[in-house]
Length: 185
Image (tube, rainbow, N blue to C red):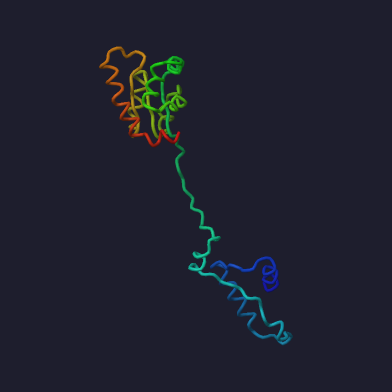
């Protein structure tokens, strides 16, 4: 070990001893402290080893903290679920859907239209807007009890002003409650 310490001092100006290594170093130092007959006074002097405590380590900026493993379920921020038959109509220029997104100042949401509608997929999203789903799909998604989901009727089929208001009011509340999340996507 003595030879290793000399080699290390050539490479590094200071040496940090970990707590589990302290015991080994103490044992080796106690063995080295016993005088040997063949040693001369010049050989007895060992290189200085700086042992840092937690307090001194905390003061040094170059010391890295131990990594903390964090398990996080992979989720995606947002999805708009609508039937495949409606996708082309909804994403066409000047569609009612795109006009609504522009009016709510969230036109970026059009990129998140999904036609693969499933309970498993819906559970992987933080925020879900379902439009014009069939009764079975909507029933399955409602049974999921997702904490941040909105169900809207087919926007293109709304005729009366009352129907449009009934669809738009909850949508506006939904967008406002998720405004921070939408601004990040």
